[in-house]
Length: 306
Image (cartoon, rainbow, N blue to C red; front, side, top):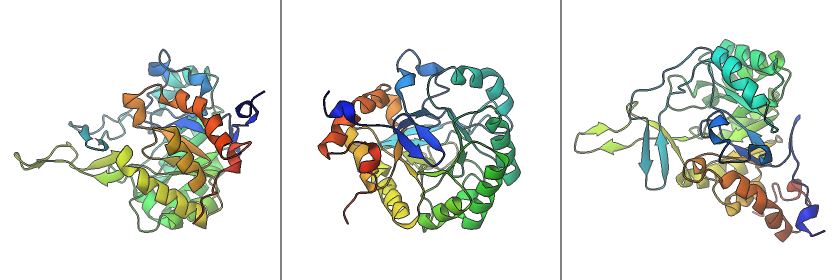
């Protein structure tokens, strides 16, 4: 048996345990069905299907996405068919997969979040991710920019739902550690850092924004340094597991997030241009951990020397 074969990739995030720390982010992997002929989904640490809302949403007017020099700018607007359609048409397939399913939910009000968490939790999914930080819908970041509001919605969802609760936070705040602390004190099993960075693109000839919504969320390589900073700040201030998100595409990216303080990661934008990246990272992770003489993922988490 080689050194890499003895490495334990199991990842603990509060009450949520994953077979490995490589997850795919909501909004970038469809409902998994779209990827079944490309990716061996069963090898992933977890799958997050597209964020769902209480009622169907048609999303924002085009354009909804713009490629930039270092990533992707999007203003999809949480386009989805609503929770009823998700439960009827998508959830049965997702639950047939041999992989933890984490359902991302978003609401306009605290009651929306609580109702969605309660309903989805009844189906025994692995966890519910509260999307408190979508920058391209009205009120989308309200719960993620105010510590009191964040605390209240996480606490209410935790009380209403028996499965683990993850809080996805926005970087568009002054002190992200304060928001993460509020989520942790409210009972979040983990925090997800970060959602996209508020940004825009301009057509100077027409003197108009390119996105139909005016502004949207920036993802991809450009935001990785911001995400790493947020993970390190939160890990240094709050004792709660962290899931790192933002510009992750290589095993070096994964390892940077782990040593900065994340216990797991979500792959987002990279899924669009390299759909097999997630399983390749699972393959590469044991060797990378072995380089640091680690026997499990937890051995390297938060070991950054500053």
